[in-house]
Image 1 (cartoon, rainbow, N blue to C red):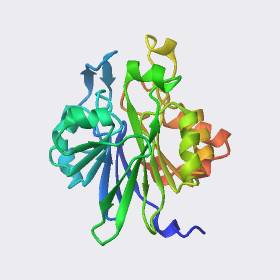
Image 2: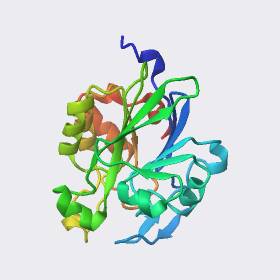
Image 3: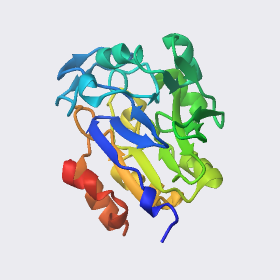
Image 4: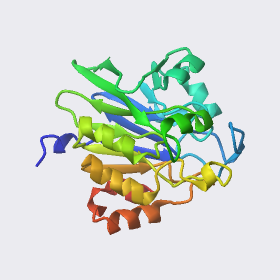
Length: 262
């Protein structure tokens, strides 16, 4: 049994890329999206939200840190999400996003870390890690879909947690594994989103089979998929994820509470 088994984190998925979890006594929220269903303008194609969030910001209670993979797209940060950032002590995001958002937002470059004080003493370390929002080399993708960052959380006596952000690159996953594997929990953005007018319809975030492969590469003991429901451009959902993990012999890695909530 791992020394961290008793401290395995519980992740509450709220729809789309948004999830809430407590770690080291701090409450973290990923990519806040709380607006209702409808069409939303973003750089590039219009995005269509199909399902309401499973909670409102007011229902969540205090949030200590927002982990924001990027700020340019409405399916990762919408109007309600932007409004709640004013009440959050710290938002960690891309270097460009930190400049655009201002306030309490701070950008993290690849492998840059920040130490956060834990309420009971000690620190949580959050490290920015690579993410590529499309199928190809980063230098070719970023001018089209923008800069994205993932996060790894570590702390003395705490499990190691990875939040992928909108990443489509298994090469980036291999880089992260080289520094942090094996991981205790991976919150993997999936859903196989694609648009015909972008990259010839290529994936802009992992599909289900790639999410399973990322799990294998990372040696992740528990996986909570997000970013696979609530938006029309997500082409694979819960059933596809379960099938892919089963085919890969990794069904036992899927967090059971995610399966029950989905």
